[in-house]
Image (cartoon, rainbow, N blue to C red):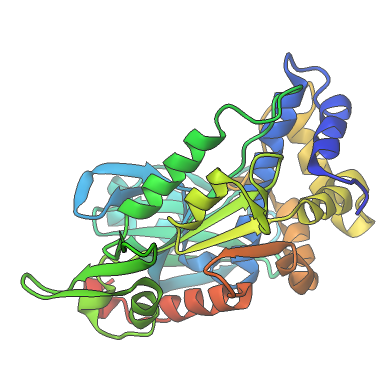
Length: 376
């Protein structure tokens, strides 16, 4: 690893990239949070789950839809509508042009105009074309193969990802907002799914699920969780959401083997809590942003465009990415998938692996969600 800790990387970014800002350390810290989100999204992509994904779509609480929460990513039951090759000089590609091509012109009124790829060749990841209370339509760019795909998705997701990172103020041992952010994440994780957590007197977790108006299941939490994931029973699957928290270390979360109070709160709230190590984020920054090979130069270029003194717009986020940067990132994650998966430690469930999380998500993605929620 080129740098001993993320602290040193943050100081490097602060001094070399954000020296022009009024609070260079805070600006660098926000960038590190963006990197965590980008790494998480491209992990979803390399697992071939991006066509099920929405980004920052309001997620209602279970049986309390008046309250919604924005989480980084949600995965939804999905059906392919169309796919199309992207020819040279085709940019920009607008939501309206896609809908007309698909013969969905009558639905344009229900859509919010957006650009899948704008005239500056900037992609909008998981670009929503039209939306209704029950379903929505997204378009996704496959830059490695110069194609885009259009999917119709159910509004109710089957999984969610939330990213948490808190920086340490200069001279402080602990960031003041750490515990509050942990509580926020914990609250969301506990309120969005039909599968509820109950703490037994001996400290173990039980799961509670209402199957019908008069039928309830109470069982060991993780046994019930596994039963739901492998079930075809729509009464079990309806309104179930697998909750995944992704955290990174920056002096506050400590490590997976030495968790503090905040990490323990998150670990007992999410179904899965995975931990991005200093080694992982250091490799990402060093190999793609500081000293990339020619193959990945487009990543550094997009980063510089987004964070220089004279920047015009941010094109290095989970939502917006230059076409060439997206292609380079996809290539990097495909080639280094096993290495990247090794950047993460699983905090909870205990004795589980990232491969098992990927398997559970793939099982849920393959379910016949139309049997649960109706026809897409």
